[in-house]
Image (tube, rainbow, N blue to C red; front, side, top):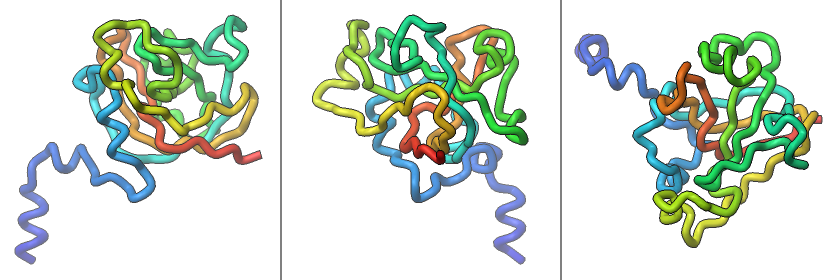
Length: 161
């Protein structure tokens, strides 16, 4: 009973930040450029959907290649996961969830070089059209207006079929 009472009066921050699941790699956060711009919604979850072209045909891998070295990919979520999307996903990301694989490309942004130095990301981006399960942190990217949600950083991307 005392434990239940203690849990009821626990910090709201604890309630909003569930503990990481064992299949998420928390060490990836050391390679996230300016992590304070990302508000963690859920420390670890898996989402399922189809990789779609976020580059609008400009890049063969379908991802935008960000100056901070991250990919900017899109995932068209399977039905039933729409509550993960924010207004920015609908208005600025064509209704898709953003997935940012960290340190994927050459870093050209000077203040982001350090986080990727001597680090090689092992997460692979499957081809556009792949049906995948992506596991990682769900965040709201506060640097964009309207704010959108992302999996950033993803720990794993598994092709389902």
